[in-house]
Amino acid sequence: MKIKNTVALISGGASGMGAATARTLAKTGARVVLLDVNLEAAETLAKEIKGLALRCDVASENSVETAVREAATVFGPARICINCAGLVLSKRLVGKEGPLPLEEFQKIINVNLNGTFNLMRLAAAGMIPLEPQGASGERGLIINTASVAAYEGQIGQVAYSASKGGIVAMTLPAARELAQFGIRVMTIAPGLVDTPLFAKLSEEAKHALTAAVPFPKRLAQPEEFALLVRHIIKNPMLNGSVIRLDGALRMQPK
Image 1 (cartoon, helix red, strand yellow):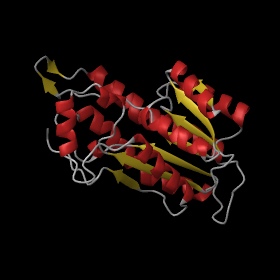
Image 2 (image 1 turned 120 degrees about the vertical axis):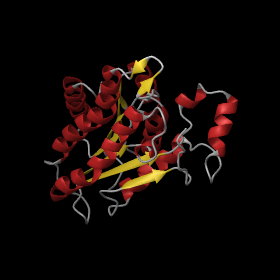
Image 3 (image 1 turned 90 degrees about the vertical axis):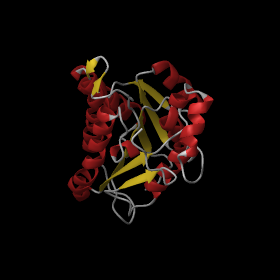
Image 4 (image 1 turned 45 degrees about the vertical axis):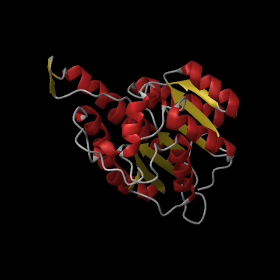
């Protein structure tokens, strides 16, 4: 799929991997729509890349419907959708204070898993009526963000792993359903990425995490996530699969 002049929706686009992807696609000529609960940060980035910033809570049906509709009105229908929005929770199933509160588990599932599905379904619905493009007859592409925690969840990651495992599990059936319309579905499962989350850690903690990565022995950069997104867009045979971006990392129990 071509990127130049193509509209791309990016949830969680105001920071981290979403922001890096927005910059990369904008440099390649995409018309980028940043969907984020942090409208101020999204607007700052949108000004930089000549994109569009819209406040959007992916866990809200009305919020996503409104954002997708407004994006189509301003920039036109999107052929690319990238789900980067998500939350992290590190709490044991049963901790010192008792069982993990159900509402905390539900919040992670609601944002990470339901939020991904929410934007997927609406983006796909907008892609189906579009004219097919290129030799493959592509109408669109959806790229979701999972995590290596979907496979090797650590102690305290029950909720997070469940949410990311659900994203992994949706990939193939969604790709199979949308294949008849020429819409691809892919998922990236990053390992340890140098995002604002890691800025809060001590140098000692960062060193310990870096030491766990076989090679390259460092945290991944958000720009490396963005490079993979760009390749997936350009390679029409990538469909229905999950790609790990982790430097051969396999997470230990803790």
